[in-house]
Image (spheres, rainbow, N blue to C red):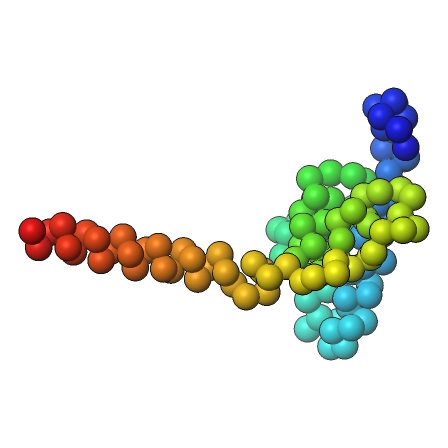
Length: 131
């Protein structure tokens, strides 16, 4: 789609995104290999994760493009899926999965950084108080 086509597009022109989200969830569901009630990628458990109803997940995977769509894209990105593959209509030459895993997510870099920062702030406060 060119810019003008994107600007003139209706919600039905983006249904391919919904279909791709469903495809990825089903793929993750199958890879996880646990029973439905225990599988984090069941519609029920994805709904619970997002704080929405199962019906919202069904709509998001079929016809409704909303902020929940963006949430799912970000969740799937954190699981190694390429957001460009989801969003670009003609994605034949775009890899479905990212070539390199998201190392920040994989290695909890952000959490470790936050812990380190809090430790440093506490140490600096103790040092200041000792002066």
